[in-house]
Image (cartoon, rainbow, N blue to C red; front, top):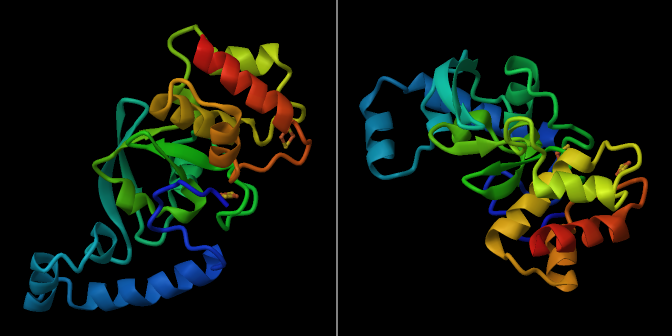
Length: 209
Ligand code: FES
Ligand code: FES
């Protein structure tokens, strides 16, 4: 599990299925009294999230992804990973476990890494979302991407988008990370090919660069 991800939707030990089931109940409840005074009171008290106050059939919303504005229809139970991959066709974000355990789906929200399979898309409204597609600039790869290539830090590549997004968050927060810091902050990203030593090496070199 990622230790440092401020992901309010990611709950250790709770499967995505159960999580969404539970959420569905609250959403139905919220949708029932959407137009009533009760909703206004809850909102005023700060007890309703965006996800609690949209109709169960969803609504058109704006997402900011990789500095672009997308108008997209979002249902309250849809995860950010689903919306990115299936509605915005940003398939660089991978889904593996879909329960917050592998880190393959990592994206940045306001520069913080989150597991997008456990983060509701409606809760990303109004925030800056960065996916692997937004890391390179124009035709130039980001230094992290170059170092992953130079250091042979990938084999099948399935974990690589998530690894790079978590690594990007590391070097944004700490321009001179040591090995321990990198290991701790990449602990939520699993690689079935076992490329960890080369990933750590690539991140240290990218930070130096
Ligand atoms: S797919 Fe999201 S953490 Fe595994
Ligand atoms: S390179 Fe294959 S899962 Fe990491």
